[in-house]
Image (cartoon, rainbow, N blue to C red):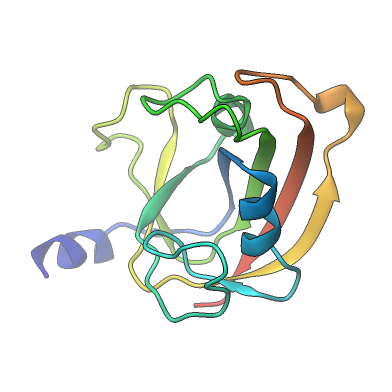
Length: 151
């Protein structure tokens, strides 16, 4: 409760946020369907539309998320079968800019997605060939997922 009171004092961040990651082909197709609600951490593939709370973070800079989509950033490396490079573009309406307060390494330009946030998937796109990087493990598919915050 105290944390939420403190976060309420920070002006809402209402711009784009970015998340990157790696998934297996099966995970990608189960998780991302246009029109489906996405609720974030705690969900498992196939839980589209379930009422889970999202409490996570995103970056204000696409380049930061690109490192995660390549499998080369963060402290958890993708498994060998996670060859789908995913770039998630979030249209945020109620996040908080915690860049100056974040415990993550400097330069991640972090925004906090508040508990209870929900998103709807508005578009699934193939990443342009000019933007594709194989990464580690080598990617076999590249996707851009666009989401809009609805709660």
